[in-house]
Length: 79
Image 1 (tube, rainbow, N blue to C red):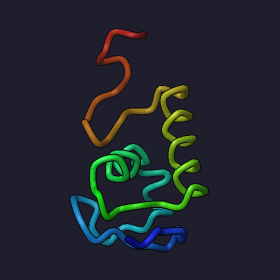
Image 2: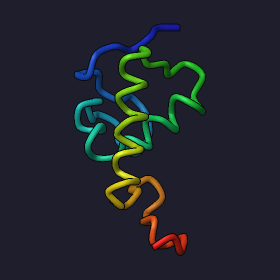
Image 3: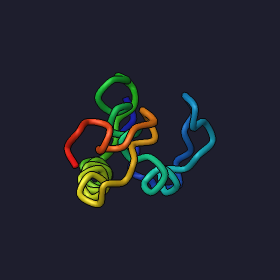
């Protein structure tokens, strides 16, 4: 299994095929964290995994919508 440690890596699966990890960091970091947790062969370096986890948390704090599910935090009644 190869560990990905390059933000220029382009996805080879899913609805974001062809997008770079750099794009995904701002577009939908939660999609990447989901992929790391659910796709055996998709492994990020510790540095990149921390980057994506941090951005997911920052988006939650900012109240930005989660594009992976098409919902915002307001949909859960936590406003």
